[in-house]
Length: 108
Image 1: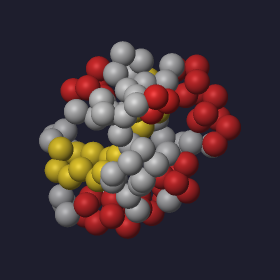
Image 2: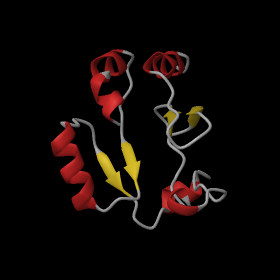
Image 3: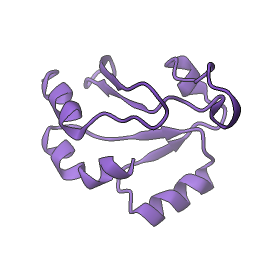
Image 4: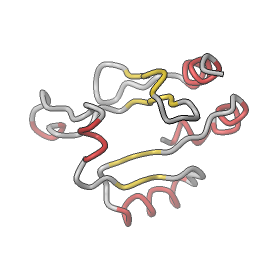
C-alpha cells in the first residue's frame, strides 16, 4: 500500500482509483493510513468476507503467515467487473506500478 501511495499520481493519471482492503480492524488501518500518509480509502474486512470471496486466503501457509491474504491487486472496470489480476507468488512479492497502469489502460 505504501508503494501504491508513492505512485498514486501516476496511477490516477491512468484513470484508476485505488481502494485497499485488509482484514485489519478499522482503528489499525486508520493509524497505518495516518502514519504512512495513505490518501486512498482503506476498507476493513475483519471477517475476511471479501478476501475469501475473491479466493485470496492463504490456506497453505504455516505458522505466522497462516490465514493471511495473498497481497495483490484486482483491476475492475466501471461496472465492477474484474478485468485483470496482478499477483505474485509469496506474501512479500508485489507487482509494479507500471504493470498496474498497463492493466488499467487495457480496459479503457
